[in-house]
Length: 590
Image 1 (cartoon, rainbow, N blue to C red):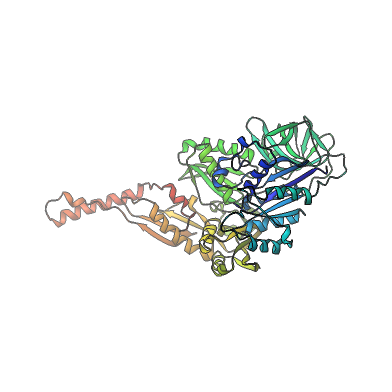
Image 2: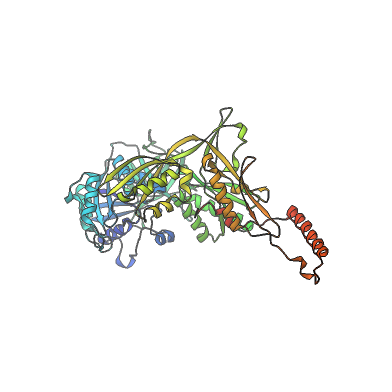
C-alpha cells in the first residue's frame, strides 16, 4: 500500500492538463514512443478538435518503484460533479496554472473542491517556456491563494517536458499513501462510467475497502442494481486484465449492465454476498437545468434522432429526454442538459456521429409553478405554463457566479451583471486580478452572457457558476404570433420588466428571417391577450396594370380591386413557411 500514489490534475480549461499527462506517460514508459500522440487520453475526435477534456480517463504508471494512478479530469463548469467525484477517489491534486494567463475562475473552483476533499495540493506553473510567461507574477498569485512557499511551486512545460520528472518525484514525496479502513466489507466509488457497444457498461472505480474479484456479484447501492463483474483490471491506458482489484487501487470493472443509469457516477459498489451497511458519502442525482427542443429538419429522420439519443443516453446518465410535438417543426425531443457546453457537445455528436440535420430551439431553464391549491409543478418550456388565473407564483432558478478579471475592467462587468438582473455580492483581489462574486437568474445567463463577458473584457475574464435554488419572481409568458397564429415553439418565459424589450427584439429579428409573402404578414409579441410589440412584413406588389396599354383610370381601379380581393383571400388561406433560423433567433442577441 505504501508504494501506491493516487493523484489527479486540476486546472482551468486549456492550461495544459492533458499535455502534462502525455509527458508523464512518456517519461514513465507507460506508452511506447511510436504509440504516442498529442492528448493521448482524449479519445473523442471532438475533444481533440476543441482542445478540451469531456470524459475523464484514469491511467496507471510506474515511477521509481511506485505505482502512480492518475485521473485526468474535465475542466469545464458543466462537469464539476464528475470532477468532485474524481477528487474523492484520490489523495493528491496537481494544480496546474498557465504562466501566461494566471489563476482563472475554474482554477479557483477546482481548488475549493480539492480543499473540501482535504487533498494534498502540489502547485505547478505550466508553459514557462513561452515568451509571454510571467512566472513571478503567477507564483505570487498561487502563494496568495494556497499560502505555500515559493520553493514548493514547480516550474514546468508540458510541451518540452521540462520539470515533469520533478512533479512525479514530488507526488511520491509529498503525496500520502491511500487511506484504507480495516473492514472485510467491500466498498468502491464509481467516479466514471461509460457504455461500450460490445461489452456493456464499464465502470471506473477506486477501491476504498475490501477487494473485487473477477466474476463476483456486485451491487450498486444508490440505484440498488445487481450486476456481474465480468472482468476487472487496470488502465495503462489500454485495459489490462487482473484477477482482482484490491483496496487503494484504481481500475475498471466490465459489467453486464445495459445502461449507465443503473451505475451512476458517485455510486458505491459493494459485493452481494457481503453487503456494506453504509454507502460512501457525496452521491447525488445530477439533474439537468438547461432544456432545448431538438427537431430533425426532415420529419423522416425523427426515428433516427430518437435512436441516436437513446444510444448517447446509455453512456451519459445526466441526459434526460422526452418526446415533443410542435405544429410548425413536427415531431422532436425536448432534451435536458447540465449546461450550455454539454448541449453543444451533444448537438455536435448527433450531427457528426449519426449524420443528422437538426433544428435546436432556444435553450430555456426549468421553472417551479405554485398553483392556487398549493400544488407545485415543474415546467420545462413556456408552452407548458398553466392558465394564469390558476397560478399563485412562479419560481425561477438563480445561480451563484464567480468572475475573475483584470482590476481595470471591473466597471464593464458590473454593468453587464446589472443588465442581466443580477447583483454583485462581493469583490476581492488576488494580486493584479479581481474576483467578483454575484447572483443572477439562470435564464438570463443562458443565451449570450459568456460572449458578452468576453467582449466586455477583451477575452481576459473567466467565469464559473453553480445553482443556488429557486426564487419567486414576477415572471410572464411572452407569446409570438405570426399572421395571427400563435407559435408555441417561440414562446419564452421572461421577467415582466424585460418582456417589452424581448418582444420588440424578437419581432424585429423574425422580420429579417421570415420571407415576404404576396400579402402583408403581422408579427406580434403578446402577454396573454395584450399585444406588446408588432412588426409588419410588407407584401410583394405585383403590377397587375402592366397589361393595360391605355391610361384608363376605371380599368386600372377594377384590376387593383380584383387583386385586393385575391390578396384578402390568400391571407385567409395562405400558409406562411417559417424557416428554421426563426427558432434560433434568441440564441444570439447581436
